Image 1 (tube, helix red, strand yellow):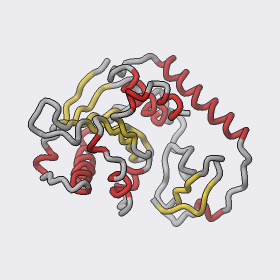
Image 2: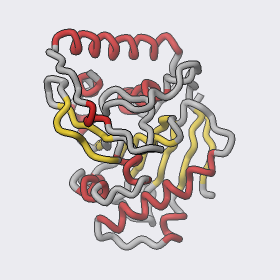
Image 3: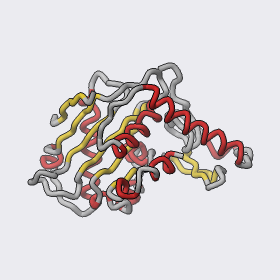
Image 4: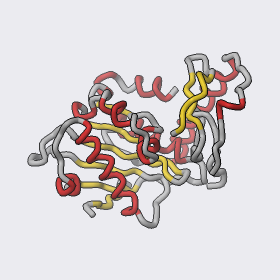
Length: 243
């Protein structure tokens, strides 16, 4: 449904954009050796905007990488934007892992970038409309992406707009589930193995993480779970892999 809504924006708004898989950053933080190779195939250094969904501590926020392929010495030099639907008390605490991630992106692409160079990339922490309960963060980052591209980077909205956006997504998901034949999942499909240059710019709650769950319907994925891929009928494929 979200991909369909994005296509309604027109190809001209999407041609210079990449949206990374929502679990790649999470897998990167957990030491997955495959993630950087997957990202390399996305050619993000040829795009103006790369959207990186970030999930840490059961909460989603959004990182936007801008102009990664540009020179550091012109008006279009690289910068980063962080959008969070819950203003955290210590926004700087996520900065080191973000910069380490970006440095690894440069190295994976065969581009030389020192820690000092990566440290010079501006990281903007924008103040955006905030979620109202403990589970809206996923919908909010989807809406941030949609509005960023639809409204030429203007991210001000009223709650009735995001409520309508969420309603469309949930209605589509409900219809898809009703129309798709469902098969019981085998127990092994979810196997539990146990337990700054940042600047702030102003642009102007009850349900918690869902815990162990499949990749396409998730608020938070606990450690030690398998990430299971799904086919186009909504059925799990294989046993999945640890993330």
